[in-house]
Amino acid sequence: MSPVIDPQAVNHSTVALSREMTPQGRRRPAESDTLFIGTPPASETDHDELRKFGLSKNYQLVVATFDPADPDVAPASFLAVLTDGLTITCGLAGGRLWKKDRQSASILLFPDARVLLKMSSKGRLIIREMKGPYGDHGYELARASLLSRANRKPGRAPVVAPVGTLVTVLDITTLQATFQAA
Image 1 (cartoon, rainbow, N blue to C red):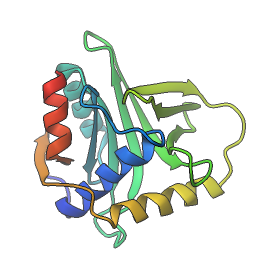
Image 2 (image 1 turned 180 degrees about the horizontal axis):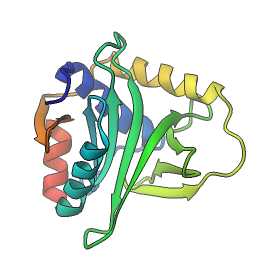
Image 3 (image 1 turned 90 degrees about the horizontal axis):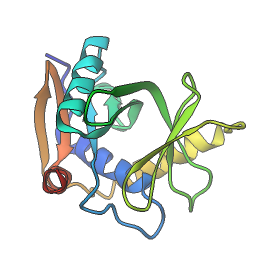
């Protein structure tokens, strides 16, 4: 089994993450097919299980990994699982949250793959090629903004469920909305 994480705190962080990535003035609509989940640090086998899960359910996943020893309960890194729902699934590991300024929505940068992920106003993940430099100030700004939002405790009830041997945490409201869309 994976290391123990605080489900309630992780839940607040994943809900805050989904809201941070949503463009200003928009709410994630119920028809979104993107699940934001939190996990302890995952192995390559766990990544494979998450990719299989995303493909089998036709979900796009934004997986925030949390260090159980981190007192801030801030994501240490990100994994994105993108699928066409039929045969193809893509996993992007080593992501970092970045924000241009206080008013902008956060995006996920995957420097090794030279891609970025952002949310559309309709709640869909958009993948783009990374162009130009992304300053270090954006990482700190995104982290501070995420922690501030998570401290307001936006999550409802956390759902703790295994995917393979990995323990995952997501919000009950997010789960219900995604099931309705499926």
